[in-house]
Length: 158
Image (cartoon, rainbow, N blue to C red; front, top):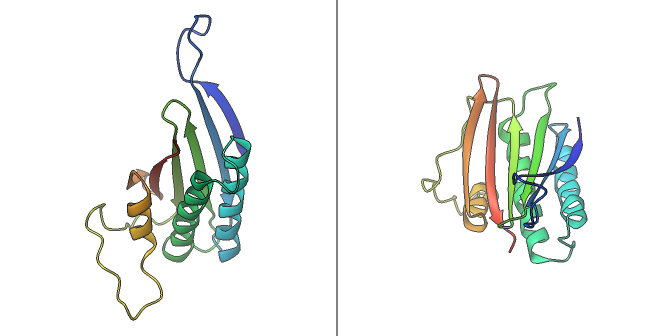
């Protein structure tokens, strides 16, 4: 199910303080290269709708992080016939964007943050999580159930 939801995260909505909004966007995409490309484009569009224009640094950085996490889900987390899920959460108080990509391979977890091996100079791949670690404020992996894993990162949009 796809959703774009905004709701208040602060109690006391009748007070003089404005409520801080949290925006959510979730979509399931096919675990194919086309699905990964679509994830990046949809993330850029959603950020544009949330006030981060396409040509802004926050949009470009966030779109790149989505592309890297989605590509990893397709390449390393794919199970035939199963999709991956992209979830974006914008916290307006910081402002911070949390990017979550969930795939059906909890058995294939990336190394923990801070322990990523240097990529081989002979290979054209293996640098995606290094980009996530360099551009995001922090990242990690969670397994909420025995059937999926979520690789997430947060990026400051300020």
